Amino acid sequence: MSSKGKNSIFLTVIAVMLTVSAVLMIASVCSVRVNLRLFVDGCDIGVVQSAADVDVILRRVISDISVDAYGENFGDCTVTYGFAEGSDASVLLTEDEIYKALYVASLKNYKSAYGIYVNGNFVAANTDPSVIADAVTATRAAAQGSDDIEVALAGTLEVKQLYYPTSTLKAGGEISRALLSLSGELYRTVSHDAPAYISVDVNASIDELPFLGAGEGQVISTGTDEDGYMTVSIKVTESIPFTTEYRRNEDLFIGTYEKSQDGSDGVKEVVYQIIYKDGIPVSREKASETVVLEPLPKIIDEGTKTKPSTSTKTNYEWPIKRSYTLTDMYGGRTVYGTYSFHYAIDIAVPSGTPIYAANGGVVTKATYNGSYGYHVIIKHDNGQETVYAHMRTEPIVTEGERVYQGQQIGEVGMTGYATGPHLHFEVRIDGEKVDPMKYLP
Image (cartoon, rainbow, N blue to C red; front, side, top):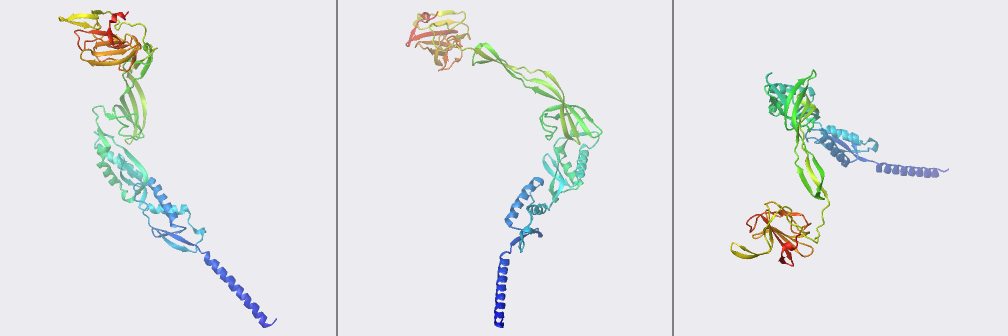
């Protein structure tokens, strides 16, 4: 082969190699990844894919810490980013790794510690729980002052293990002084000379202080065992709610009720045993119960008698069902020397005597005027009307109410124009007042 042919092949190979190299270089450039390098408070944490992902995790960290930490000064870590060229997916931080880094940084000014609270208000914290316990003991001793005085817890004292800002961590002496300044809220003096009355609510939870609630109780005994648990027996007086009983009454109509006895609460004395540890109640149970006064039930009679029909009967009944005197009849009469016509009969009976409907019908009047006083007018199904006047008080029926024959509608009195207690009874037919005696049995 000639040298010219060899040179041609060599040039061709060189051209192919250059082309392949260019393609590889372009492919290499196109595959380069540009990720972010995460820095938290200036510390290089690692490579992340996007700032948005970190922001989502940071918000979750702050939400989670709010449950475990006292205060809201967390989440103030500084997050910055740098470029991390050439990194592939295998070196990206996981969500858990990002979460841990942000969680630790957010609590950089916090420590896991024990915080003490008085009546729900934070006082101070310390990383050693024994320091808290010693401070409480010292405060109680200072509040007691001497052996001649006995004090009892009168407020809520609570210890919580959380993350607390380092600025809230106090030494034992500082905690004792802070508690002592609040001793008036925490302790009260118990007299040795008289029974101690304290506030007790047997329905309260253990956490509800002072002494589990409200109401007066009498301390009847106390005792402390070798482990420092004090048992206090407290006697309280409680009411026993009365019950309501319904009984059938055949003399009352269905749908009517009548109270035959008022109810009254009973009384019982209950002894509760409350166990305290370091002045804090830890358990409560009922020891005994004595009924001092039985409750009296409220009794309601429920009618079972079938209510009569309110339709008008063929015959009337007398509106008064006891012995009576007819003091004036239907017709002409002379009163104080003056003649007049009396369009009714007057039935004299003692004041308060029941008045009954002479027949069934609809009450069209149940009111008062100067002549009749309190009175009732009943219109019957046959068009007739009956009038009942001079009632003692307001009628016990209302206008528009249907009444049955023999139903009480009021009481005899002397309201309006009357010289004595009696029932003025009228019968009207087509609006004309007729002699009632013609219609009464």
